[in-house]
Image 1 (tube, rainbow, N blue to C red):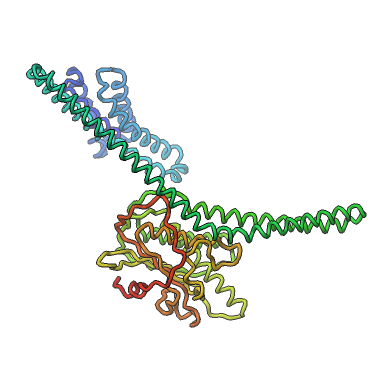
Image 2: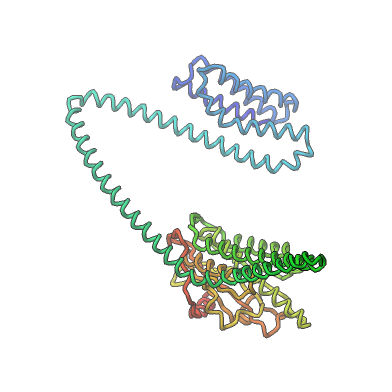
Length: 500
């Protein structure tokens, strides 16, 4: 309740100062001063524990309530209303906190953190309104001084007014003309930019058409084939019903139901492919902001693991985050970089899980699935950059398909497991941030996920993200199209050998 004394002192002091500038009548000066002195005395007595706790609460609440009452009752004190509005949330929250703590202690324990957060925001609100009010007051005082100066200047220069008005009108007309010309030029540039963006979108969509057609044709073939078979089965079922063989008709109906389930499954596959295509060509309206890449990597590592565990209770893998403590914040779009990390980590967990299944089916032991996410600082052309790796100790990517993994709609997963847009989108996002996405499929012992429990035949896969800390590249409205073919990046060894 000491807060109520402090609020009373602040508001009384503020109104007392306003009496000096005649914004509050002078007859209020002494009552306000005595109010402020009384609050200071009571605050001091309570601080040294000379005031009974119950009496202290009644006096503090009565004092602040009385201050608010007179401010809103007497129009001449309306100067203090902004201060009341500023501190009212704090007063209400403090009172609510005390009431809940006294009458509902069990509820208070569960709501204490929320009330503390609300109190912090209320203090920020009060301080902000106080600062704004002071600035407005100063601005008004400056405006008053300027107004007096202008009035004196106007009286002294009334003879020159007509000439100055003519000059001002001429200058205004010239500026208006220049503004119209600049606006017309800007509109033309925007129109040209829109045309270029539209042309780029059309070119990108045309480039993806072949991949989309190939990928979506597979589930459509299933839908068409099962539809034809179901139609034939319906004819057979009608014949059996006419013959009176209901058992055979029921068996055919069960087959039709299975076919319909398969049609729905492959229809959902086609729907997922179309959604992935739309995501690939979506507009990117997110804003860049300084982002803690370590926190982002650690969050999505755990999110991926627990998400996969929720879907498949049999899934299990070891994971580790080896993050550089001195990694600065990077100017990126956190949602997009998070999508990249989640995609790479999901792929790593998928790979080690499939590898573990192969070992179990072959009756082999000694394989411990491991996924590692690590970060460090490297120098590239004299510039500090962030290096993030996502490593696994699975069997790796076949050499024959390594150069195709960043192509849209290309996937190494079985049919129905993925659309092939994950790595393509990840590549595009990193490129738009001025970085690089690399893959090292022959890491061997350099792979941090490889340890003594990993069979010697496993070399795993390491994906490497290189990002500048200060990204000056303007993110376009559309992510750049991934190359049709990526050859093995010759800079991998350079990045591996650079100092951390």
